[in-house]
Image 1 (cartoon, rainbow, N blue to C red):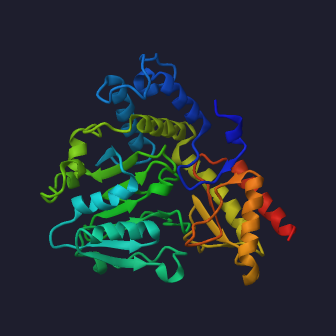
Image 2 (cartoon, rainbow, N blue to C red):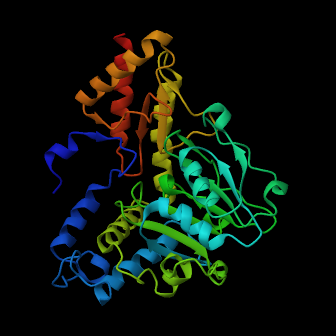
Image 3 (cartoon, rainbow, N blue to C red):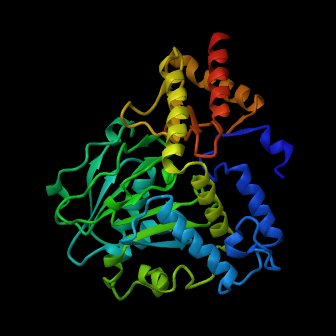
Length: 381
């Protein structure tokens, strides 16, 4: 069971993020003994822990292949794409995708929406010509920029976008389409599984699991199968080729066996909760309450502009207060919030202020409690 101390805190951390209590309990059970059929409910134990079982064994194959199947069924990844479970986080994908998808004589194109897209751009620049075809830097990334004109990236190897931005609290309302046959690449780490998405619009997508899908140490990658047939440059190491991991479906080297199991359990929880439409309805309601509280405040101001606001990462400042009072007021709010059981609300230094990450498993009651706390804090000023 989850400890009493754990449930006393509302965990607003941007990641590793909150997971469903049911998943904690089932994962704890698997640490003692994995069950057959990918730790199916009611199945017999296999005599070993998920932490010690061979990744070449039949019981673990049921875990990884079951998780792969659920990625298609629950997340909506099309069957035209291969699902892979890799390591190294989204940060490794910044370099790995550029190594594999870049074509000779063609630049890589990126839309700059903040820190994580900047890191992806930097990795690409170290590997070849890289162009930025859209950015919201001029307004401190408080919005998603207009999708670039096709002519700006028509000659590119691929077009990369970050679909949700944890630091600045912005999100693409829909997954766009790239034109002219240019592959669209998406980093959808921090809102994967939060709502139905047109994932088929992307030729390649990747997501660190530690937001909505599981623990840190697992990266979900999906790649259109025709791209796997293209050979990367000869200098790309074998282990950094997607075709290597697709040929030995996520089993080329020892995977994060525990992490893949937890991802599978999370996907089962999502399925049993009604799937992405039901989860999206709850997420819309949670985010709507918090943005309504911010928009109605005389002190707090949402950083992201309407139309670009993330449902997963809500960022705000105390910019409604007089300029000379903002820093002290922010510190007082964070101190009192922590004492009241609200953990992880401090914003990133590039925005300042506050951030509430309200991923799938975050209870709606926690959002209600935060809204009430913010209103009471403001009344006492």
